[in-house]
Length: 188
Image (cartoon, rainbow, N blue to C red):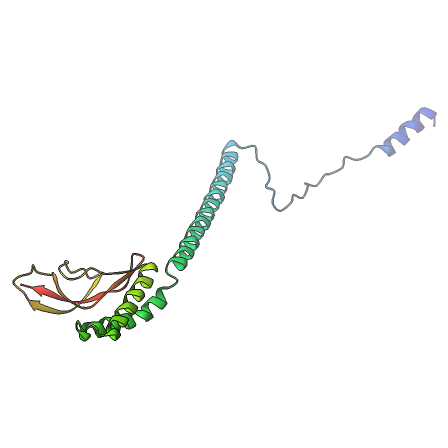
């Protein structure tokens, strides 16, 4: 064999057979890219819908958070504003008894009566400073939000559904009704 033949045989041995390449394994979150325009549009629409859903979810969460902040602030303000409500409600029967005692004592010049009147005025002043105000009743139109009707009476001198007598005073605490007035209402 000549040297030329030998080199050709060696070259033939060295020729590498074409390597068969296997498709690369893609990560789970990747999708195979297609060159079909319809498929690309579908994928784009899916991703746009997903982005819009995420955006809507974020907006709802932000709105929920703002509502929670507003509700918490309102509850805190109400707690501060109406914190004394329970105490005031407990004191109302005492106030009622004071007023009954004063009404039954008459106009006597007794020092005891004047002392009780002074205490009553002082008590009313303290409650007023805390935001207590009486519910207007006699002569007012009956309002079920502010009055509790316990009787209806025939009264031709008053318009129908007008409060003609207050049996127990009602009170507001800083504009909120804490006890409705117990009243008699006129009917025609």
